Image (cartoon, helix red, strand yellow):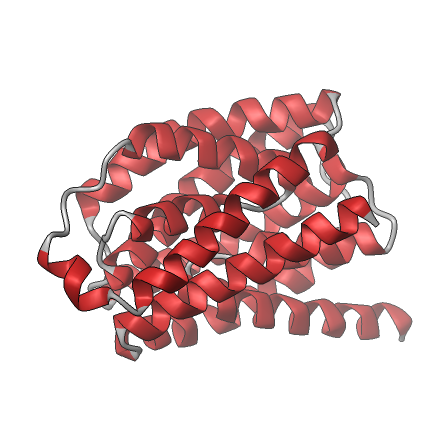
Length: 251
């Protein structure tokens, strides 16, 4: 009976994490990884479990966004290929070393970026008038994939926040980043499988079930919420998660 209770718990966690991630383009990996680390799972094993689950949840989420017209195919291609390279490298590095030393630097960057997104959410009309094509997308995908593998999550906060910070459409950015994440996550999971293996299948199964149940509801939220609201949510989530990471590191 205890195993079934644990499975239901992870289904709930996966559902809640995917609702946030699918709607605002981030936080599934961070929330899930934090839970696993909190119960004593090693960083590489936690990241491997979360990315194994995310292979299914990001696929479902990306498909839902595509069907609802939230995807820019060109942006997906520009993000996915370098993201796969960065993710594979990051997973290989984490399998050999600890990524903890990088966390405070990433968190500080994301905190500033999150505050900037909140600022831009309240100046959306002025920004939209001069919005330009996103710059440095390939490098962004490469870095996002690397840090996502190292930290067990971070693709959304890094990639989505940076694109929104340049004035890109919130709806199409979130949908495209979610679809590209499937290919990045698949690469990271394959690398972990070849290096450290995959364990804790009850946790992986629960995260998968909860995430796939939430994916279509999260995509609907993205389609119908105003861009200003989505951007404010993105900035708030990034800022709070980053501040929590900084405080935890120095406590």
